[in-house]
Amino acid sequence: MKPLPVDVLIPTRNRPAALAVTLAALGAQSGGPLRIVVSDQSDGASVYDDAQVTAVLRYLVARGHPVEALRHLPRRGMAEQRAFLLAQAQAPCCLFLDDDVILEPDLVERLYRSLVAQGCGFVGSALHGLSYLGQVRPWQEHIAFWDGPVLPEVVRPGGRAWARHHLHSAANLFHVQGRLGLTRDSERHYRVAWIGGCVLFDTARLRECGGFDFWRALPPEHCGEDVVAQLRVMERYGGCGLIPSGAYHMELPTTVDTREVDAPQVLLGGDDTACGQDRTV
Image (cartoon, rainbow, N blue to C red; front, side, top):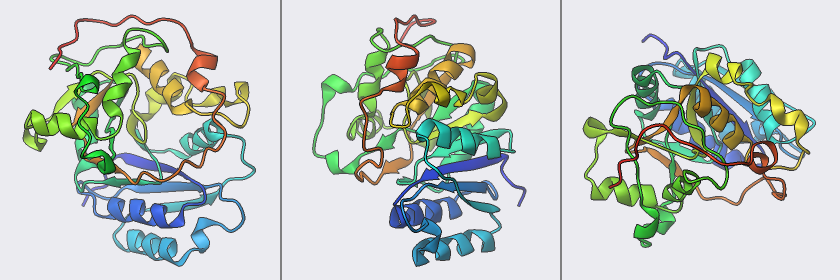
């Protein structure tokens, strides 16, 4: 089968068991082999010393997926880690995937198809937190669909579009897609503030917008670096979310221990304006 023109880029640290699960889900993806690049910044022993990770890496290679298992130290923060991964990308599209995410078997193919069809800078799948299935939060279920092509938008912290991020909390998106009866055959694209954990970029456009080279402007301990990159790409080329999502969060404790420095607030701040009209459901 012809390889899918997607490189999967996975930053990881101190999570061998979760990484093994994430990788196993990639091994079951439809659409052709994927080149997978893992960058490990674990304290002490590498995740590649773990028998579970080793077994899944062998499985991926046996299934025809080229794999690069890299060790990237010293740690200089998540933005620098992502910049390092982006430098390894060779394919026209790159999927930044967290190391604690389970993907449905056709999700990467669906994301790629959407990115090509929309011609925008990124398409992402927000993560479902299934431990929250019993919590229905209608006040956080506002969704604004793109009924036409995805267009560039300027979104900034504190602006009127910033509240869109509540849709991605807990199991809100899962409840919305169920309530609307959306399936793979009726998937939609919607406006986002940002998407955490599973985002497919047009590689050239991400690089053109600076990628994660802003890491030098941040202290090593920071958060929100993925948000900054997405907002910059969205401003120039547009970006959207895909529903139904098909990505599930393992809901593990964060490995980013210190979060006082929020990259979007530090580097962007300000207000936002958006193109066109939101459609509310």
